[in-house]
Length: 125
Image 1 (cartoon, one colour):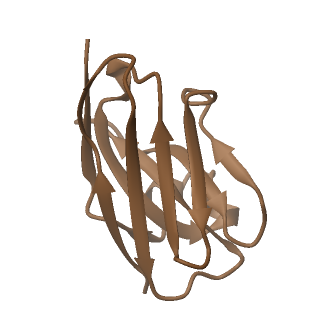
Image 2 (cartoon, helix red, strand yellow):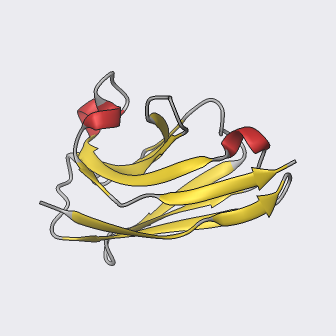
Image 3 (cartoon, helix red, strand yellow):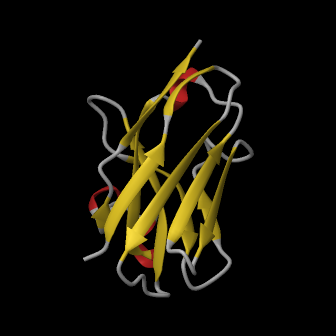
């Protein structure tokens, strides 16, 4: 099973930027995607962004399109999430994830695959 280690996160004012990084140990298959979900207290984990491992395809939640950018390095087994124009509603624990591309956008995406330990992002107004 792939193990994921996240870094980045923290506290920033609204309109600011943060960058999250995630490093994976183990092989990631081309049929998989690596990306980010986020979760706030009392709510289910929601999809944020992902990068398909075997293709130049990226996916974004509508709420972050135009503000967040995901990038990956297949050689280093890493993925990064550049978050710009942050809003207070972006406050959440962000989790790195690896799972089949076929499920990451589906109803089980928030509970499938391998997960990092989570990193807190707090955006103050």
